Image (tube, rainbow, N blue to C red; front, side, top):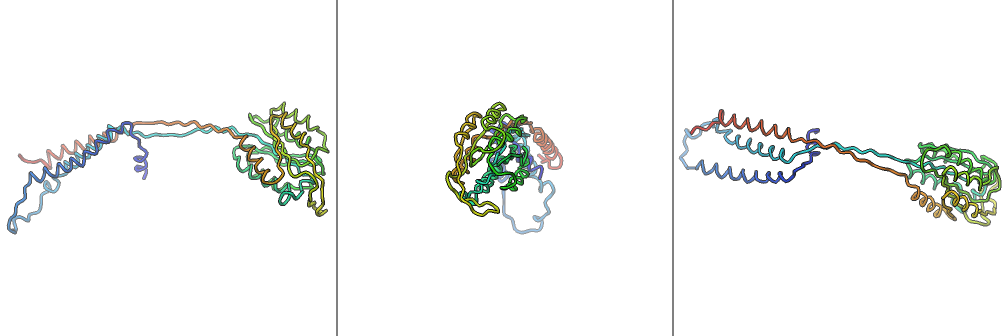
Length: 332
């Protein structure tokens, strides 16, 4: 099987010589016609003397011609310069470090998204992460305060496990956008990658925390971190299902000027996602803009393989000569 694979992988540097092989059928026809002319047929009455066992010389009288054709085949293949090639490629991947800063305040339980804003965002983020296998991704969650749910990691299974466990009520309520952004920056400030990105999602206004969001934006700029901001959900009074309190009507407003400022200062973009479909489109747009750089270098090493074919041709030619002038010698 390995020998057949070897033959299939051969390439020919001078393929034009292979056309000579088309002469072999013509030579076979010529040989058959010539043989018939040299050995005329005649009719005789049935007689025992004519049914003698053929001699070895008679049995193998066509062998020299067959060997000669094989010699021709091997010579032509050798002239066509068969080559084997060994190729491999080197792939250089320049990944992107991305931190998701996700709002988990009470308004994220609003049901204008199905089943609510938080669960809908988790599903969209999950799909986004699964489409970026070469990037390191981290997760920061914030409400009245912020903390790192998952540090930067290339183990996306770990990230997705942490994302699945995100829920409302684990920290004090409120919307500390500055703290969420600052915590995300802290995760990226020592990153050595050329492209560092924060995707900050919120559905409210900054009303808690210790860090001013505008100061955090300036800090992100100093660390060459690009921030994409997303205003999530509808504005106005919306129903929200709060664990332990049932369904309540909540008034929601988004500080779009602040989110636009953060994006502009850091050379990012601001997106508005009033429903789940638009949220999917936002993450798809970010995915297109933040492409991982992959470069491939191909190496190919070719070596001539004509010598085995030439050696076979020489060996067969010597065999033909030996047979023709010894065992299969024709008497004049």
